Length: 64
Image 1 (tube, rainbow, N blue to C red):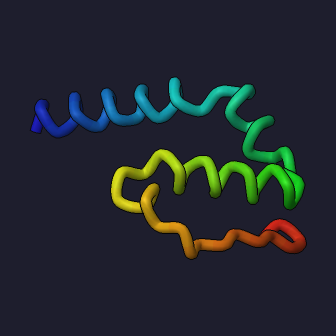
Image 2: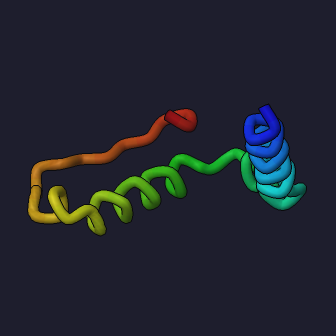
């Protein structure tokens, strides 16, 4: 029982430390369509299995 309590305390502490004000501000900032498209293309370019594919097109409209 003590191990479960200790595990829960560590988990809660880790969650509390992971949620900072800086993270919240970044999450609340709405990205533009161009920023989203650029981010997706960058992720695709760095993915080992997808970087050789040439027929992938990325378009963003209204944040989607």
